[in-house]
Length: 584
Image 1 (cartoon, one colour):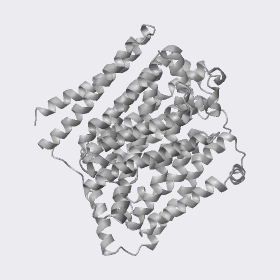
Image 2: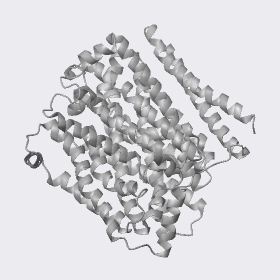
Image 3: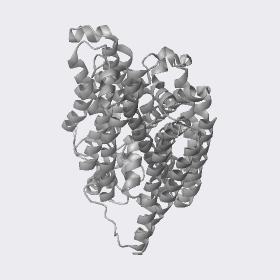
Image 4: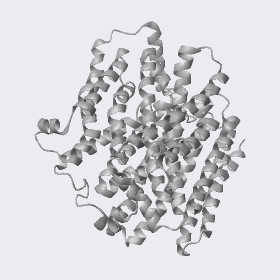
């Protein structure tokens, strides 16, 4: 009952964020990208959180429980991707000077590709958000004994309400708040695991499988390292491309975009070292899933590994706080997808084909309606994914990224570097890439692959290969060369297209600079710090008050530790706002 109360209070808090930030949006630019006024720590938080969902604590934690270190490859691949953001792509993304990423595609590849990439990107992000919702449902079903579909509907409805009300400002603000809480909870959970185990070395010695790196069902180490390399390539592409440039479009200038990328990179390097220690602890001290009392989860039982740790080894009330973090992680990914998709439909479909003279006020209202419709669609997809039996969340997530997203990411990455390609290179690469993905998903099988490489494959080896390795290798050998070879057919642009392409490269090569002494800029910065600081401080006090929940006296200080971290972060922002205000 206490855990349910904690989650309900957190839900009310999240809905309040949407209401508080509703006044920050007065135009489509404000609603879809925060007017390009956000500070680096807010932007870095949302960049980090878009690669983070409840799947981290469900499917990924289950992978850590069964296979040891293997899962780290994906998260460290994200970190390398964010390093690429810091060195190059964050600046380019902010310097696109557009409201939606598809508008960048329009400048680089023309009108036809604007619609082709719209049709390709929307289903992918909807499916990914549905997967995230499903991962959350697995966790909630274990915690509260609530039917998964009910969890999907309730969570989806709350995310939609927050996103519709507050737009990009509410999305990014909630991402920052959730990032602070999740990192604080993760650190405390890891410390508890290490203390209870008697040291991290004990966890590694007892909790990791026989194949400490690959898991126990791998016969050929080179296949695993191929999977790791492909994970890095795929995650790099996922974070460095035009389609995902929306992460940094909301930054107030180039400098803030780069600092945001560095923050996301740091968090993604540190995070995996914390998130999976509790899963390895469970593998060491409670490895028999038959004793968990979660038989209703069936083949998905290992996805509840993190919950088992919190339930069995943390104080009463921490399950509710952990569930709040799970909801937060999923919501942060979902609300970004909702906001981005609504912006694409309004500015790249409605304004282009239906009402090119639509006023900004009209498009703002339509954006809220589209956010609502996309939310309903994502909820429906989450329910459908839940109906699929014997499906690994880990493999489904990696498969969506490697088979569906890669064909789109290749031209949206290479377009930053290669200027002289015919416009059909964009949509042509999509068509070729989709054909390659179809072959991998519906034609290729384990016997076929074994015959080609000349070795038999275990179930784990082929599962990893089909969900990731094959996609990256074949798209690298077929789809990417197709795009590169299109340069041979380049015969110049029309005068209109030449202006657009020149503008694209001029924009991406010209830094966005703001006057830090401008009173309006200072006022905007102070408002962000003060508003978010107040929310964080309030959340910190509320978490600290969980000290009074009946527990062993020493255990109660777990809540104090989390609450103090969150409160201090909030007060730091409030003090910073006051100091900046003095210069106005």
